[in-house]
Figure 1 (tube, rainbow, N blue to C red):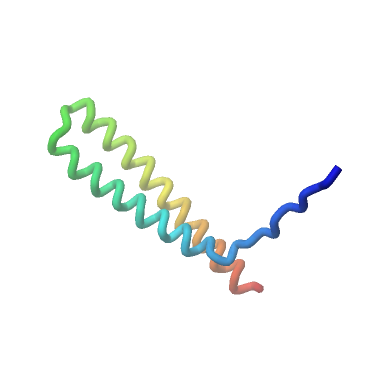
Figure 2: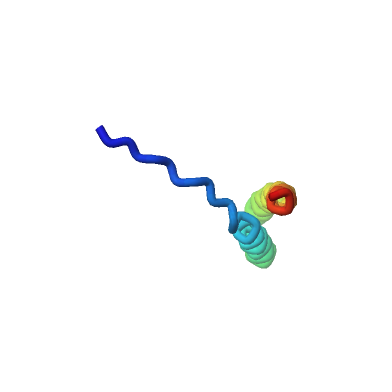
Length: 75
C-alpha cells in the first residue's frame, strides 16, 4: 500500500490571502449597505445582522494577519 506524504505547510502567501479576504468582505458589506435602499424592514434587519458578523470576521482576519506577519519575522 502506498502512503501519500502530506504536502508541506506553505504559509508564504497567507498574509496576502487574508488581506484579499478582508477586501472582499469589505466589498460585500458595501454592496449589502447599498441594497438596503431596496429592502423591506425585515430584509434590512437581516442585512445589518450579517454585516455585523462580517465586521467580526474582519477583526479576526486582521488578528490573523498580524499573527502571520509576526511569525514570518521570527523566521
